[in-house]
Amino acid sequence: MDLLESIQATMEKLEQELIQQLKSRVPVAFEIGAHIMNSGGKRVRPQLTVISARLGGYTGRGAITLSGAIECIHTATLLHDDVVDSADTRRGRPSANTLWSNEMCVLAGDFILAKAFSALTSLNNLRILEIVSRTTERLSEGELFQMMNIGNMNFTEADYLQVIADKTAVLMEAACRGGSILGGLDSIQEDALAQFGFNLGVAFQMTDDVIDYSSDKETMGKNPGKDLEEGKLTLPMIAALKRATEDEKTKVKAMISAGVVTNEDLEWVREFLNRRNGISETLLKSREYLSNAVECLAMFPDSYEKRALIRLSDKILHRTY
Image 1 (cartoon, rainbow, N blue to C red):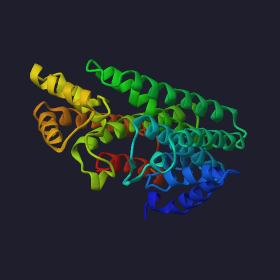
Image 2 (image 1 turned 30 degrees about the horizontal axis):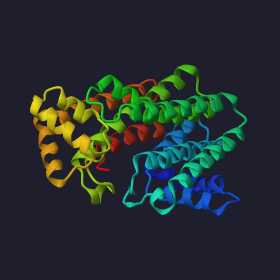
Image 3 (image 1 turned 90 degrees about the vertical axis):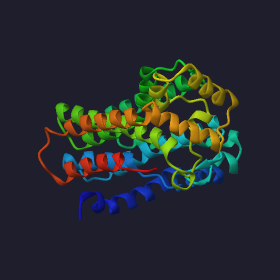
C-alpha cells in the first residue's frame, strides 16, 4: 500500500471537516456548498497539504483544518466561476446555479470563503493566514484578468500563463507551503515544496485545457470545446493560432463571436488543433512543468511522502478528466 492509499483515513476525516466548515444557520448555504463539494472533486489540494505536512513529520489535526479551508476556497471559486460562465453542468451533474439562483450561488460562495478563513484563524498561525490571504487575492485577480480578455484573439501565451498561475497554480503552491509550515520544514525545503505545488498546478491546468478539446461529455461531465464557446483562449488554441492561416483565424473568431460550438465545429477545431500542433505543444509544456515539479523534490530523501507526491504528478499527466 502506498501513501496515497494509506491517507484515505485522513481524507475521510477531511470530508467530516468540510461538513463542519459548511455548517450554517441558513440551510441553503450548506445545501449549495454540499452540492458542489460532493460533485466528484479529486481533492488534489488537500492531499498536497497533508503529504507536505507529513514530509516534516506532522500528522496533527491542523493539516485537516488547513486542507478543509483550502478546499473550501477552491469550492467558492468554482461556484463563482459557474455563475460567471453561465454553466449548466459541473462534473456531470447540474451546476449549483441551475438548481439555485445566480444571486444565491454568489452569496453562498462568499459564505464558504468566510468559513474558510474562520477555520484558518483557528490554526493560530499568522504566516499561514497571510499566505492563504494573498493566494485568495490572486485567485480573484486571475478571474478578473481572464474576464477582461474574453474573446481576445490577441491573447498571448504569457497572458495565458498569468491566468493559470493565478487561478490554479497559486492555490496548489499555498497547499504545499502551508503543509510544510505545519511540518516545521526549513525555508529552503518550504520553498522547494511550494515550487513543486506551483509547477504541478500549471501542468494540471494545461492538461485540463487539452482535455477540454480532446475528451467527451461522458468522461468530463461537460460539453467539450466549452472554453472556446465561452471565448476563452487557452494554450492549445493559442499555440495553434500562431501557425494558422488567415482563413483559419477567421473561422475561429466566428465561433467565438457566435458563442456556440456545434458538433461540426468541434470536429473541425480538433482537426485544426492537431494539424497546427496546438495539442502536442501544450502536452509538451505540461510535461516540462511536471518535470520541473519533480526536480523540486530532489533535495528530499526517499520516503513514502516523496513517492506519493511523484505519484500525484504522474496521475495528473495521465488523467482524462
